[in-house]
Length: 440
Ligand code: PXG
Ligand code: PLP
Image (tube, rainbow, N blue to C red; front, top):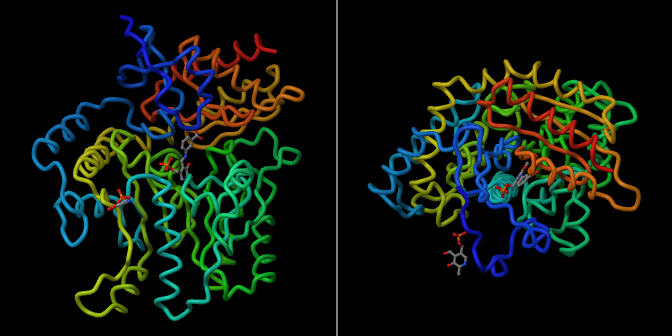
């Protein structure tokens, strides 16, 4: 059944959207279930992106819906400062249990951007509390995406942010990114070449003196800048350099958390232990905004041991930190992940997913294919003089054919809900192939 398009499309300034294009031909989603959205023009749309990399349990899961309904009818809101409610503590424990030991506290916020700002602030304050207040520098990576707060865009490595939003945080520097099609094209899983790029951190340690560096933040697998995979040995090397100089290592797992790579977190998949992990998205399967930072043993104690009694140990928090609805959603989501064994399910589908993806080799416009867990990147040759145009057209055409994909620059990024069936995987790649063959 068709649903009317609102008369006024102009007043809502849409985020990260080509507003003018959208408003000439709106794409409205009106309901969702499992692997599918329903569009305002009455079509079923196969969700190849889990919304925006977040609906890992699939859409409108009964158990999660009912938990949130029950929560709002019981406790709508509870102050987050100097007060608490039971579910907040339960979510923290359950999240910490998702990791193999060593992680003992969780700080909550409402999004990945806030999680990143929180982690950066914990890093700075941690060193200060330990008497190493000179460690004020933050190191990110070229092509890193860490959300849209000033902290996140500062450590992020996105040129458009640097162009539009001024000098941002002072004292930030960046290591090189690891994307190297010349050496690593068509990698299945981790690329062979590039572990030595981690040594770029040594360069910055020489340049700035390591005693001025508080933390390094990277995405273990970069999602939104085009599915950039860590070369074999790279993350281990970053960890070793951070250890050598007393620098905190932060993994931004906003995308890689909660089963996306076939494990709870990428830290487990790669066997590398960061000092902090940022999360959001899959924590509630996208249904209520929630984010957080998981910290390694010792960080919280450093704060609590240093502060005088009855005083606030860490001067930070959000009105909606550990919001009751978010906590209810998170608890139910974690139950669904466990009961449906969704992380293992994702791991079990990884080979099938990779096989279907790599069958696209040789398809018109395709210059690279890469994958890990239930993530795939399809890099297209940009149209001469019109970067992003080809991928955007592919996105529009796929949507017409009932498949939701996501594009970033000229890269198609796929990240379906972890409940996807093989036939649906086939359909996503068949649709993309067909579309690439028809567009210029
Ligand atoms: N860190 C990482 C690694 C992310 O991927 C954020 C932080 C920010 O999270 P919030 O919740 O503030 O958006 C992200 C978010 C895309 C896409 O299509 C990616 C994100 C968000 C929206 C779209 O690539 N990543
Ligand atoms: N701006 C004003 C004027 C506020 O009073 C507050 C919170 O009390 C904020 C911003 C921060 O809002 P939030 O805690 O939702 O991030």
